[in-house]
Image 1 (cartoon, one colour):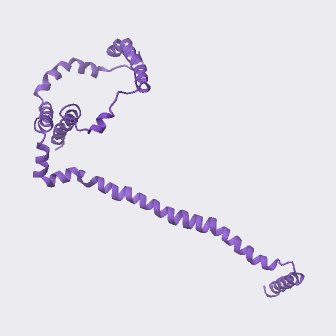
Image 2 (image 1 turned 90 degrees about the vertical axis):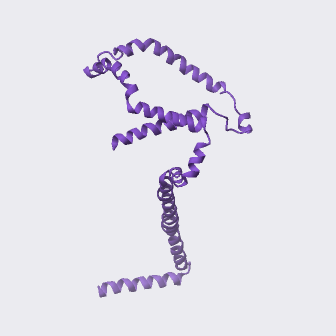
Length: 221
């Protein structure tokens, strides 16, 4: 099963890769006139840095190509074993085996399929979509994984964040801890304000109440 899945992946990879190539660089243009009017070459602010990066890269490649190919670039820091040498000796045999390998022909089949569907007969994908609409919808919806992710993870995380913002931040932290403490202080100050009236008999009355409370505590403890 694993090998069959890999072979199917070879066909599909070749198909969608060359579909991209054919749609991007071949066939009729699909852009409107407004988009075409705004096409232009990159400005110098982009071109000059690219040239500044490309020239040293080419020079470095010319200077280091021999050391890279013969394995002496890193000196004795990296020592290749015997396996790379054996692979190098059998490379020609591998290359000769390529035309007889099943993945090679499957890749060519995928490329040919992309050429037929998007260059030779571009109406075929639409016909296939209409004929097998159920399969097309399943594939177009990506088996529903995007909607599942959107509803469960994206919307769920957004809903959780909204709940934490509403109940945790606004009501608990702001409502009870921050503003609640301020309200308690304000109400306590409002009550104490009636005691601190500046009248002597009010202070005497409070002192009497305090003295009675203290004596009661000593008597009934």
